[in-house]
Image: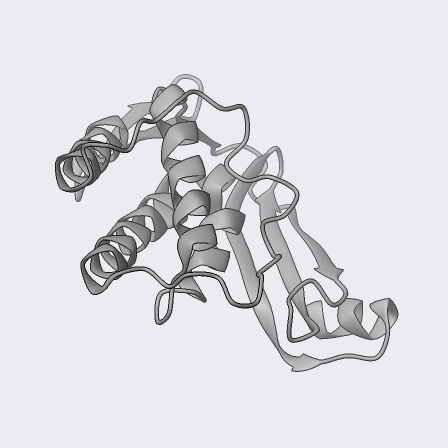
Length: 186
């Protein structure tokens, strides 16, 4: 089935559904490269580096044209991340916090995610419909990850061997310890 950019393959014998967004990702990358032909995408192993949450003071803001491209591309990547590519969700969820006033560092983080997707377009999300009676939540919080000292929360809901829900978000309040950050994440 092809629905909203997602190609879904159902295998009744294995009780699996594979979700692929290769065509949508390819179109997003091509549209970005049409707008920014001088940007070259190289193959990288991860969607983000260890400085994802770091923002610097006095960094050059993007032009209004590039800021529009940044906003549009991040929105498209959020659509992909929530449906078929949870591996980019952490990086994309951070970039959504930067769409109002993106800077050059944010632009480089966007290029990194697009480069990762360019080299890993064939990755598919496989959902297994077996043992769905067993639900498990995995939740974590990262203390003071952002420049304003707010933490980052992450959660995954699994049904047996299959993860079906992914969430990463910046916490709304400041916390005083990593323990408190973990409690807010829950």
